[in-house]
Image 1 (cartoon, rainbow, N blue to C red):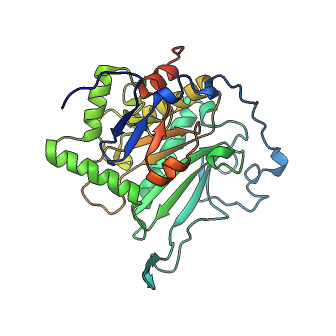
Image 2 (cartoon, helix red, strand yellow):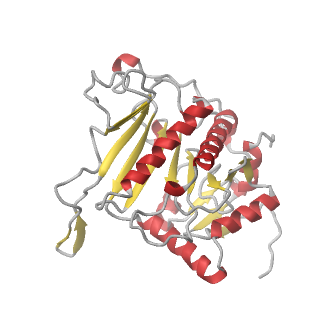
Image 3 (spheres, helix red, strand yellow):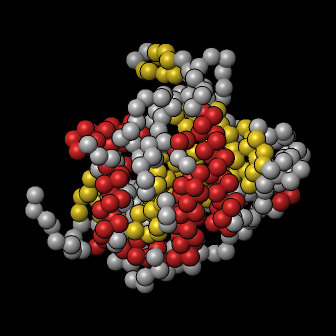
Length: 337
């Protein structure tokens, strides 16, 4: 296959795992406008109106988990008062509605709350950031014992454009009775690569990116953060354990700590160099059905809200990314464009 020289010409790049195509079109924005736009200072909502400032007063007590103790809690896990899924008397039941396939939405929807009203993940101490991920891991381990759960979605919304309706820092953990189609495609692609080459696709990606260095945003002993070659959105970053672990649940504590700190470093860079954008991050763990997923390499995706989907994206499901991932990584490393 001929190598195409690196130019400012648009390229269609295919994601190695999902098979999704992405249109990298750097010529559409030589320098994204939002890099030069000063975002107004964020205005926290008053503590007096915050549902998480006083958990007892707002009917969120007792939590299902609290650390270090009820009096001096720094982390609490509570059920969402407005859950997307709810636990039922039985597991999710499939049925037909005419020609349509339907299931009852049986699952759980929990929130992890950190104590300080104004300190988001970027502002936590290193030990506090690691503790958040320790609780995530414990919750994933517990969810794996739930016979009604097929997948767990753990994510963080920061800012209104990313879906955060409450200022107070909180993280969401949902157990689903299905494996989402996007994750199915990703798992299938990783398995096909594993069958063909006998290796993990993300381990190969890490090897290539560490050698090339251009798209590496951050690295420590156990973790690496990369701007993916086929990034769907500007300044998207993947945070991965360097060593192969298919499951977040089975990853050693030292590695989980380094992954949490790598993620925190990425978010701090986005705050500094991208004018504090709204963003989401989410964990891609293995499904909970206890099958063999040795081909999967768990990871975290960070997606800042720097662009909008429009007619092309909706009509083709091909994302347009106007920032070359090499440039995105260089920007996040502090290199001036």
